[in-house]
Length: 68
Image 1 (cartoon, rainbow, N blue to C red):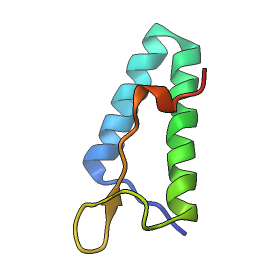
Image 2: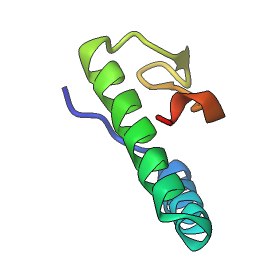
Image 3: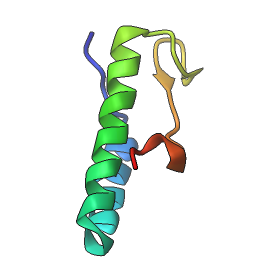
């Protein structure tokens, strides 16, 4: 299943990834891994997450979603 990012979510992803990278390479890598895990979860179970509109859903990452 293809997972799409809303354009504002895609912009936020890049902004947050850069923010983490400016502070810690490890934190940035952990953030990317957490997002990748969420994408895999959505692909495996498309009904995961809250309804955004009639055909799309969204999920929120929490700080504990990143690996340690």
